[in-house]
Image 1 (cartoon, rainbow, N blue to C red):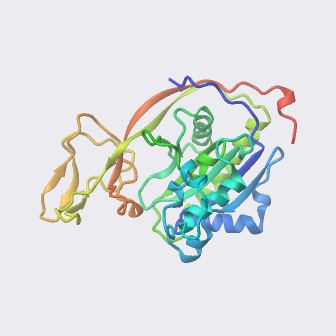
Image 2 (image 1 turned 30 degrees about the vertical axis):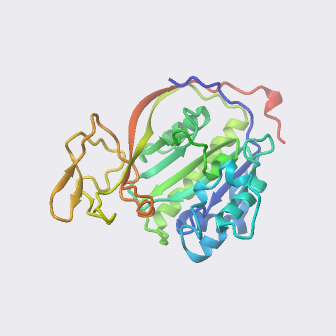
Image 3 (image 1 turned 180 degrees about the horizontal axis):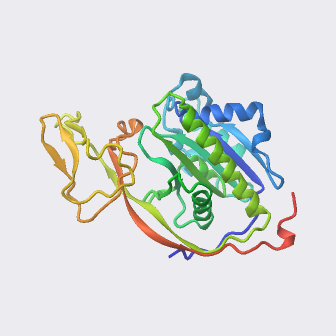
Length: 319
């Protein structure tokens, strides 16, 4: 059940960020386009600001220069004293926090939509760091209704015992939009067009939300991250196998105990030894090799989401 209070403040300051990872090309090129032609992002009740999050990594067509920018928005990094030896992404995180935050304050942007691509076969995936965030659940449901033939799933990603560290955590509300599969450094026309359409739908949802539209209660299946699974490795830490063909490309599909997850280079299968069915996500994601992650395990849970009632007329006035 979703028991958090229902947020109902208008979202006036919105940012659409791309290039947080410099080789995820849909967001990179969409933001570059919107920086030249921002009218596509504008709505009557708000203006959405396009932001190229990691310009140095984007110019080099690399995920990052010194460290993963999307793991750097903790208060430890943001509030530390700057030094000449700081990694590039730490300096850039502070700049973005000044532009879009500060994180955890009333001055922060109301909403950040951060655009990503993955090499995994996730299709359309919304990543939400807020546990049972009512606004994000309504947003996901809206996209599902607008695109009935296009699966849109929400992954609830709460780092256990850790402060949120993603770019969208700088704002009061936010969500990540993942689309795959797309190779790193490659721009696919179909995914570019689909992401562009989905961004428009997300901004339309925010406009309806700001204008005070009532959204009824509903139930939805979401996926909650349970942890990571590493590849099989040798005693030296090298790969001893890779994702099994029966698992490859089957993101968000059920994985039962006893089913194969890895194929060792020696030919044997490695079977999943869990006690219950899980739903793998980001299977064989290229950027996760360095993080020792072959896939994330998630559980599918049914959530009851309360209605968003109409806003009062005094709350819906244009800024």
